[in-house]
Amino acid sequence: MENRIELYHRHTDLTVTQISLLERMRVVFPFLADLAHGQLKVYVPAREKGRLLIIAQERPHTVYMSRQKLDLGRLQPAIEEPLVRQTLQTGMPGHGKREWTYGSLIDMYTYAIHDGAKVIGVISFEVDGDRLQIDDYPCLLATAVDILYHARKGVDDKQYQPISSSDGIMITDQFSRIIFANAAAQRIYRVLGVGSLKGGHLFDRQMTRHILRETMERDRPWQKELVAGNMTIIRRQIDLQEGGQLIRRIVVLSDITEIRAKDKEIRIKSAVIQEIHHRVKNNLQTIASLLRLQARRSQSEEVKNALQESVNRVLSISVVHEFLSQQGEEDINVQQVMQQIFQLVGRNMADSEFFVRTEFSGPDVVLPSKYASSLALVLNELVLNAMEHAFEGRSSGTIGLRVEEDGDHWQLDLYDDGCGLPENFDPHKTRSLGLSIVRTLIEGDLDGMFDLENDARGPGHGTHARIRIPKPDPDEHHGVVQSLEE
Image (tube, rainbow, N blue to C red):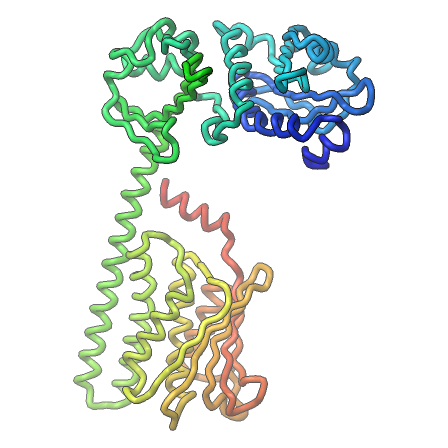
């Protein structure tokens, strides 16, 4: 479907100024549909004689209305909309009945949209007759029209966010006396010990005495979060003014008590999980220290090397838990972990006179912690393998990690510029413990594939360890997080 501006130019004779006016008003249309508890449509006269163009259509969030087809952008014969045509011609509001579904009638209210000189469009509210039983429903419609007029000058769209069916609505006159309060607002204040709202003053002591704390965001001075009794409420206030004088005030109350309680639970659980990761990291480092101590006491060079490899394996896992304990999230950036592993291996395995250059390229790979631990151990083994075999007889070397996206998979290439693999080397038949760990973790834990090969230029130009792993299912990860929260 064409965008709205194209629709205006293609099907109407409205000027740029008139179109701009309607676009400014459009910001409040969803809010008006919610306030009026009915479907909103905006009609403008089409260039084609006897036709009306529907340039806006909003369904309410505050009530259920049976689904109808989308009419937005439709050219409607004016003869089928007598109320709209009448309001376009006279500029006067209209009220009547129209068919909603077969055999079902609905109330329709129409109001003119002026540009200051003439009527340029009509806004309609289609309302289920049952909604008209709401006390002072005309007050809601009158307020909707006031907001529409107010929106001509431009308004903050954040202030006019849609209203939900559970939100309380209060409307006051120019003296802040409450002239309308819906059932949800009555329920909220009844819990706070306030009886009837209608006729009371919005800032009366009885209305405010239960407020224990209020906070306001700097960029939303019209909105406050109130803690009153055991409730937490978002209070959004919209002041309609004319000539600097208040003419009407709308207050929307959203009970977010359960949301804040859940937030608190999540913060507590997050802190506990962080502490667990911190303790696991400390315990792993203690184990690594014991292994180092044992290595220093051993007289066998072979035992020392084996214990040092074990130290690096333990510490590579501790790196993941250190990240988790610091950031409080269950996702890990693989490149950041890799940098830590390079530092670990460089500290523990490289000769003091040997210089290792590290390279990283490609997008960030972010994995849930249960995958990141396995991948960290894999990368640790591959880096250890490169440090041990690739740079013999050299004073420097390069190890890098290249990451590429391939649809729903990650491709990781850990490479070096060392001596390459020996002739007739078969990574599938090697009895190396490190490569056995790598293959088991990639194929078992990560459901991926692993290959080890020389650079395309041949032996003596480096080695490539290629890893292909599926991207974690975000829905599956969300389900894990959600189950933890529950």
